[in-house]
Amino acid sequence: MGRSLGHHIAAAAMAATLIAANNARAETPDAALRGHGGPIRAVAILPDGKLASAGFDSAIILWTIAEGRAHRVLRFHDTTVNALATRRDGCLISGGEDARIAIWCGAQAGPGVTLQGHSGPVSALAAAADGTFIASGSWDRTVRLWSPDGTSRIAAEHAAPVTSVVVTVDGTAVLSAAYDGSLRLTPIAASGTAPARQLQLTGPVNGVAMTAEGTFLLACADGVLREIDASLRPLRDIALPDGPLTTVAVSPDGRTIATGGLRTPVTLIDRASGKEKSRILGPGLPLWAIAFSADGRELYSGGADRAVRRFDVATGQPLGPSIAPASSTEIVDAKDPGAQVFRACRACHGLTVADTHLAGPTLHGIMGRRIASLPGYTFSNPLKAMDIVWTPETIAKLFEVGPTAYTPGTKMPEQRITDPEARAALVAWLARVTKP
Image (cartoon, rainbow, N blue to C red; front, side):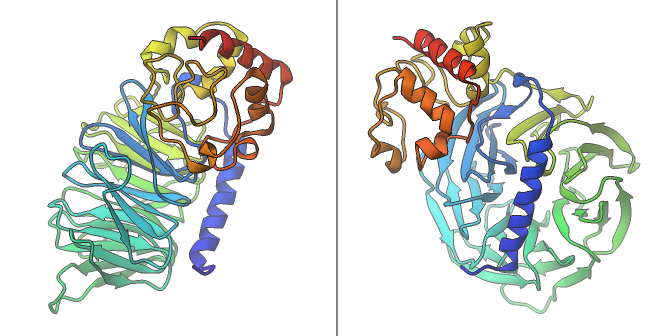
């Protein structure tokens, strides 16, 4: 795969993300779902109520929202996962910078189906409401339609990388948007005379959402949220003051629009009036993804600070469940300095025998255990090949130099503890509370 314009867009986005991440304000440990090792690019709500998130660390995390914990981690893509979508049968669809699409169904460890056809990163996904096809957009400047048998065809072509795709309410067409501001409303029939409708805006369209009435909401790089009808005729513009918008969603009841961007925090807009209802200040900028819960009462956002954040739609206030599994809460809430350091780890690691279904393996009995040897957890091949036994010394070294340097091939979020006293406190505390 060559160095397409899409790669340069990705590099610029990553640079902006990392700058914002370094400038993000700290927040209390229980105010977000943490577990990703890089900025979050996509979030989606599954039919069973679980939340899926994905991003630069190539991992897809399924969260049990009520408990605030990572339920499963799905790994398939070689690099950034740019897009997520769901099907009515409960399956999750992911698209990555590796140009591949994966379909995840049930409790299987890997994707049941993989789709390849794009020659550039997959940037957008949408599934037809009746489950008959999937639409995908790519930085190869095409939109593909995928049949249930895995075959595909190019439905639309743009002159610039595709940023968004949505399927119309009636399932008869796909709207695609591109980095050059072009929009195409393409009928999905393989044959016929109906031409694609087109609209050209002056700048990039970064996100698209569709209302139940069939109108489209566009998050634009000029900081304007635009609404257009099914014929691509402009209906109204809602200008926001802080610059480029990157994402947009509409609540299930159609009353509230949520948006955000590079400098625009999560903003809730009353759809009827077009007036701002609330603006939720806080860390996480740039924002890359927003999704409403199935009942519309909560909103979830993902961005540069690697956290999935929850908000109450009615009040606009942040929500934050405990991010530790119940069996570990009492231990983690201890006032020991080591327990305080561990709070950054508790979204992915439990401390007891019962903590077996988190993103990372339980740390129960960690001291003296060979790396990647815990039964019932799937470890990467690079970790299995390493000759490391976890001891106070090796755990301290892990956080002194960082997981990437000490355990190459790990998907553990990159984090170092530079203070020797903090490392020593964590190790001493772990040795005590994880002892069988």
